[in-house]
Length: 458
Image (tube, rainbow, N blue to C red; front, side):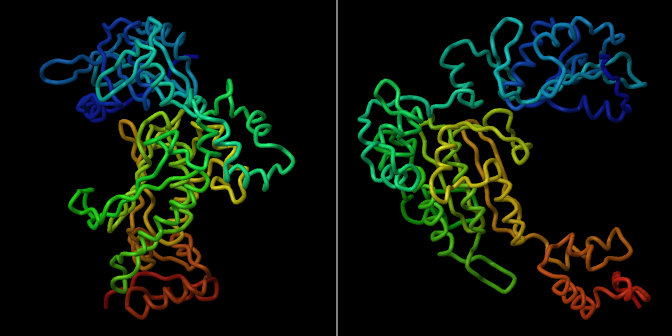
């Protein structure tokens, strides 16, 4: 399949060359060896993805356009790339042409891949900031496998007595509700939660009454309250952080309840003055459940929940697994701890009812009460969700903003922009705006559905 040639303007070319190399962007001269360039492509694919522009030279004044004479001039690169990184969902190639500049730039776009990609020398690489790091040790490769979710720590065994699971209270509750005619040992063996007589991490987290005794500092929650709207600072900490423990199913529900109590003990500024801070239960539940079920248990750290005056932060150890990135996480699914995710769904009132839809539910719940969407960030070794307590625009603001670009608005259009329970509720809002001299009905539109426009100045 021929590679497409994209035409850009000189202004667009200047903006491209004015960018700086970063975690997501790299410029390469066309003189580079194709085999060496496979290291950069693998590095992007093993990280969060990125773009490489080949045919860009660097000098003290910055980056300059020095492209290939024609498409065939880049054949040596294309042949090597397509062997290791075939054109498809993960990798795409295109040429960029500019009439004011000589030659073609080859643009390689690499997405974050679910599998580990290797360069032509057989080694994987990893993009970090504007550098590529060679993965040349078993320890580093295992870390990359853990980050991508290819390998999960939930399958490791622990040198503890199986009876801590088979004779636990949580196991008795689970069997009574799900498999009353099977013994605990039979269940653990059937679900492959025991290997060579030792329980796996997944089994301990789910069916030990106190998993934290076997997995200290990597299976609990730290809950803290900060009396500030700024960054977390020791002087703003209200009392010591609370440590929450217990089997995973109980820990999720207990953490949600404790967080809600902590949140509702302080007040925030609302439209009618100070009022109790409230976040949708679905949002807190889904984000906390996601943090505990999908965290990387190989990292020795807690799930941290920080309650501020104007937001909640939930930080879980481990980067996003598989092909998931901050940009696509509401549309793409990858499971790091598959065994935990499947078995916890068998509990009564499971915390992960809508498989793969948790964060979408959290976002929709915020929108339903007119609060801003959660903010997602990926750090070097963790994933952070910030739940802001900031109202979206009021119905009046939404309607007036729409009328800045449109002549009129109907009740139906307004309800699409600002969902309310009934058309009567929106009608009262719009009539109130008429009374405030913000809107006026458009003459002759009442029968087919009243249209409103901005109040014309006298």
